[in-house]
Amino acid sequence: MDIRLSPSLLAWLRCFDAAARHGSFTRAAAELCITQGAVSQQVKQLEQWLGRPVFLRTPRTLVPTPEGKWLSVVLRESFEAIEGTLAQMRLAGEAPPATLSCSPSFAMQWLTPRMGDFFRQYPDLGLRVFGEFHRLDRTRMVRDGIEAAVRFDLGGYDDLRATAFLDEWLMPVASPAFLAAQPALDSPRQLQPEWLLHDSSPWEGAGAFEEWQHWAAQNGMDSLAWAQGQQFNLSQLALGAALAGQGVAMGRAALVLDDVAAGRLVPLFGSVRSRASYSFVTTPQPSPAMLRVQEWLADEARRFMALRQTVLPNPP
Image 1: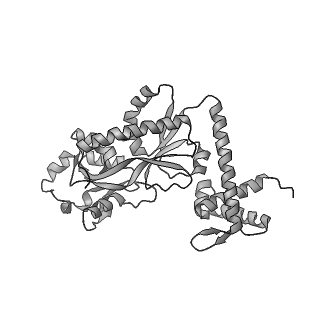
Image 2 (image 1 turned 90 degrees about the vertical axis):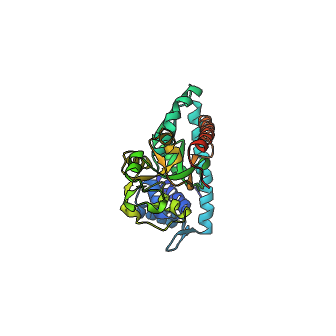
Image 3 (image 1 turned 90 degrees about the horizontal axis):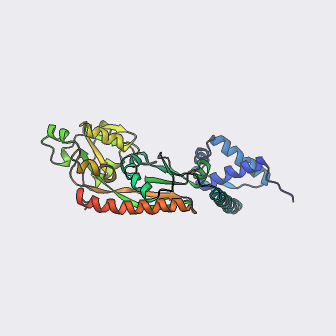
């Protein structure tokens, strides 16, 4: 049988591949930037063309049929081979600047101040950093031209290479001026809900009060009326409010160490280990340039952790 990969058939297969990886038409649609109904219709057309189903549809998820699982494996291997070939072809010419997607607060507070050392160490390697925090998968990285990323989250990247290079400590922080106005604040149980400053999206899928709730639970505290505090969509914004004396923010060590060392922020009541960490995320075959970026990040993280031990309260 002569079967040609027409544009229509390729579109059906692309939608099927995304739905099979995510187990959801909705998440596949978000990756492909089309509607959930369009993904469902494309998969249905593939099934009609094949004359057999590729998914068992349940109320909670999509389960590939045996034929669908076979097709999914073949497609993933084929797409990976195409991606690897394209990457090698791009490297054959003059290499463009390496691009690194990075969690915004981490990029502003931790990475950018260290970039001068990177360029002194690698003067011939161009590196462009842009801040964003959406979760990544292989298809999105290839489609958007993202070579590597730094993400603060729980990990769990199934189709990417993710290496944690820096853990994180959480501790409440406030400005000296705020503490001077609250001289009786000497116990976690004296924290007032309206004082709390929240990063409402510490990582994709995290709850609005994740970091404060985690810190409180580790310290045996009862729940507070979390929603009474101010909410921000970046940790750096919450810390900016704390620096301005507006309340108490949950500080991440990577973002507050310099301000604590300079006396602009004061850590309160001890620290705990965050559930999330910073990972370097790439496709399975990163470029030589990105491997050098990864090595440099790991070296910087080791130096930072040594300094962190001397400045901040260590978690129990």
